[in-house]
Image 1 (spheres, rainbow, N blue to C red):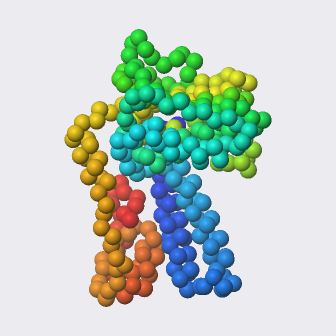
Image 2 (spheres, rainbow, N blue to C red):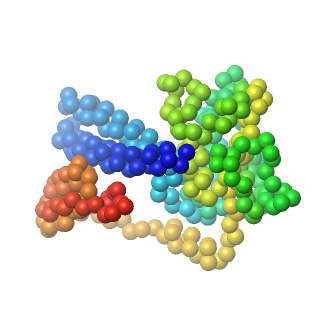
Length: 306
């Protein structure tokens, strides 16, 4: 798993640079072609497919734990509540949806968008296991892990590590679907593994969930029984909210000034190690009236200097 993660992360970074160049040149072409131009639709198709590839790259980076997160102190109950209507639309009318919010739930430090992606991925995965209908339940609660109160023995962890003692906020996603065999459970977090038809997805949903949770310094477990359903349990370290933490979070929410469009006739030194990205940025700057001195530069250990 570690070797696959390193390989996926390395490929994803380089592939992301290629896609950035493709999307950038599409943007430049769209400035030269109006909506009535015969080539306009073809350029849009190229751009949309490149963006689909970019989304796949983000999933690979999540699995390999090399994506850039923006963690902040968040309220898990509020996050899940904001997703309620979206989850209802995603799972369909034949599935009953329940949420049980833990009282006095602790706070966690996580990337808001990534945590939302985790919950949505698990909800979609659960709905796929209940094609004939069923019940989806999301629960949150506080739990203290120590020698007397640990995780259940029937729960599978992909890294087989023991959860550290401490206070956690737990998110459970439970379905009454078809369940999984022990062989399937052992592979469920593997990248590109899927029990669905090959045309139904990439098989990166749960591996992405796994990568996000581990990068957030949390734990994820799964328990399942054929014809009885599946339960995913996420353990996120609880954080103590001090006045200093609140001041830090508030400072991140300060609205940044809006920068007006830059135009001019000066000279800009552009340093970028990917040829296509460098060419795209140079052309974009020239359209704004700037001259560019371009330099190919690669820092040791760095893949992207955007």
